[in-house]
Image: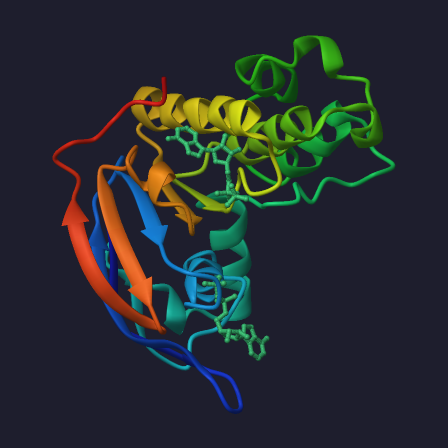
Length: 223
Ligand code: ADP
Ligand code: ADP
């Protein structure tokens, strides 16, 4: 269970997150929806322990990560969360397998890199470098890298933003499958209302604040 309470993030002249509160249950597929500049990435980065909140709390199973020291935060980033970014963030001079192994080696009880790559359908691309792979394949490597840590929470920042429609669909389908089959909590941010339709819960952020939180009764599967 994730519980964000009265979260603020202030930069010098900008309040990027202004009194954000919500709850997310284990295994939920949550979309954080909002226009560019609304404060979504800031929020996701705080949830992932890669940015520090100005005030408020982020409870993960009752533990407030905003109170963690650097050591505990590092363990949290390694073991509890996985990240998927818009532009994949793969290491260019490492192969697909080596990219996945880098994350896997940091944790106990992860998913073997070869297996993680086969789960995303890339068993034949293990020894290819990122520049030899299509955008969709690179994103699947980055998903394999994230799931090889067997994270409790998968944080996805516009994961289809750099992909064409059909490739984006495949990536969303994969994230949907990971969520439903492994009970991983998936939190995905997007500005695209169509993508929000696949969520269990939609948290809409506008102008740094929560505009609405809706359980998606009409949830659609990616077709
Ligand atoms: P979104 O992901 O919804 O596009 P962001 O969280 O990236 O929004 O940004 C929210 C606001 O915070 C924007 O106005 C942005 O310019 C500002 N912002 C984000 N990061 C920083 C930073 N490191 N320093 C100053 N302002 C920032
Ligand atoms: P843009 O705004 O430039 O279209 P987005 O960040 O919205 O870029 O990403 C578009 C991506 O979202 C595409 O890759 C597409 O595959 C995916 N997408 C959009 N709508 C849906 C949908 N209803 N179901 C599945 N995938 C979708």
